Amino acid sequence: MERAEKPEPRQVRLDHRQVRVLAHPMRMRLVGALRVNGPATATRLAELLGTNTGATSYHLRQLAEVGMVVEDPNLGTARQRFWRAAHDVTNWESSDFDDDPDARAAIEWIEADYFRFFAHHAERWSARRHEWSADWRDAFGMGDFFMRIPATRLEAIKAEVFAVFERHRDETDPDDPDAELVQLYLAAFPLGPVMSTTEEKQ
Image (cartoon, rainbow, N blue to C red; front, side, top):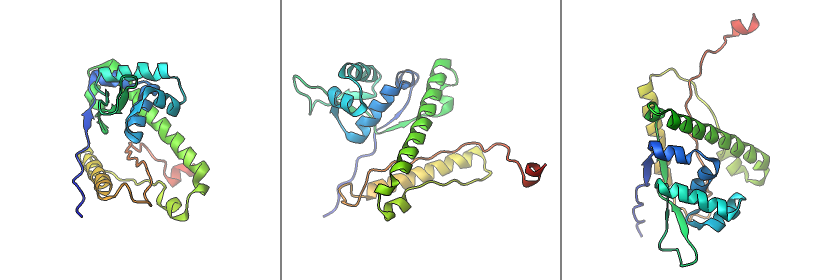
């Protein structure tokens, strides 16, 4: 039986208002939790994030005002409101906010928080790696690669790598009993000056 075509991921290119609202640790976690776990009530989200329902309700309303989360009418009742992420993917370019100091500061905070989350995630994996099978321990991991290239080629590399991620996601059966939920990161930064062996010895 042929598998049904998966819908294209719902993507959002952050605007100036959205980036200001999103630059808050609780709101970042709320959007992430809804994307990973699916629709949930404010009460359930409070349990997941270790906070109270009043806080999650407030921040969900702030996110809803800029279209980052929406109510799910198919799950809601008169007494319970279910929320879902309005998008699967968030996009932005640093230069999108060059003309707005407040939005630029917000996106810088979001990027810094993202790096903090990555470091926490890596530390958590390192502490619990012994709980995983050898196959998974070998499959997980990280690496780096150095090259001297122009900005246009770096953009091309990023696009190709994301296309590979998407292809493998779309070709994998999410109900496969051997499948696990994993997070893949892609990062590219300027290397800056590197000391040579001769300089190190001086």
